[in-house]
Length: 113
Length: 112
Image 1 (cartoon, rainbow over the protein chains, first blue to last red):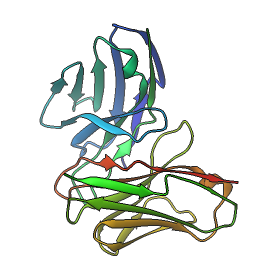
Image 2 (spheres, rainbow over the protein chains, first blue to last red; image 1 turned 180 degrees about the vertical axis):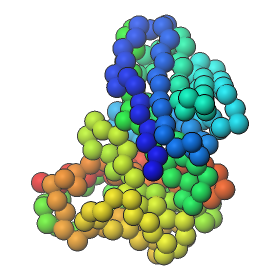
Image 3 (tube, chains in turn purple, yellow; image 1 turned 45 degrees about the vertical axis):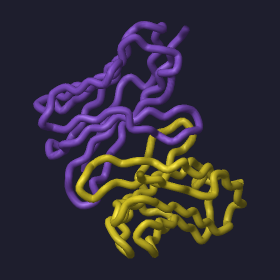
Image 4 (cartoon, rainbow over the protein chains, first blue to last red; image 1 turned 120 degrees about the horizontal axis):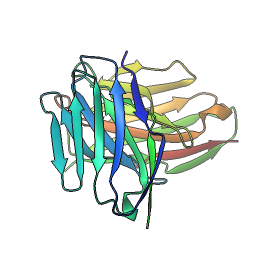
């Protein structure tokens, strides 16, 4: 089955700096890679995703890159703000029965004002 | 638009007691439905998923079970709770032809 590794487990940055979170996956058939943001005590919220036919996607201050050959993808947050502080999860799935997501272990991002 | 509900929001149960958590989705038909568990400070573990009424697939063998009695209703049950069942239980839905999954508000379960 699919295995997703996520690094780092914790990340502390100064407000205004950039943050990068990296994930690797094992199943070359995976073709969908979402990122979720989970604030304390809340549900995970889908913030951006990328499909295997695209190498990069951007939405305002967040961007995701995908390298299918190396089987890794990354989340980039620029000009970080205190409200970006949360736990971020990457995931991978392939389009088959159930469209199941396999999640990484999560990254706790702390943005210091 | 689609909405997903879970109840109860919080639950405190003694060891050995039964459990029933409910999840319902509005605004869509024939969704894929999922149950996840998140232990404190940990990641998301897929427990069950369903692609249709009465169709349940289990990802992790344990003392939990799931049922889908109606198209947009997904229930998580246990006959006897263990201490290790404590956690944040999240239901999610996805459209069958799309990969995206959207989470419900969750149920925080504490087993004492």
